[in-house]
Length: 78
Image (cartoon, rainbow, N blue to C red; front, side, top):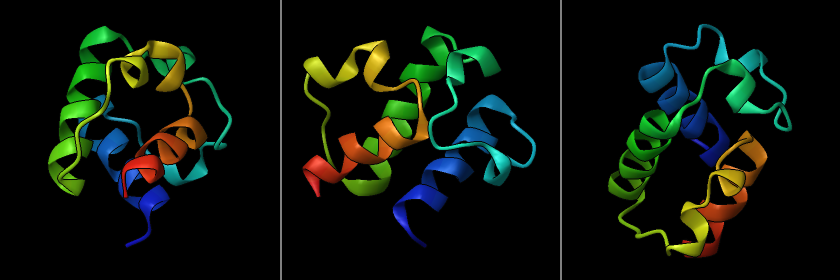
């Protein structure tokens, strides 16, 4: 499974987004209901999935608010 697909699946699980494959990679996830709790759950899920650890800087909500930003952030650690 490619990175973007894994992130989309995590969004489905954590935020109950139906059809996350239809989301634009640049769509603001906050407008889809992402709150700080969802963001933390998503970070933890991605850290466990890829055996990485996000830096404090990467935990800023602006770095987690689109699929593309999530992909870019995770790729830094792979």
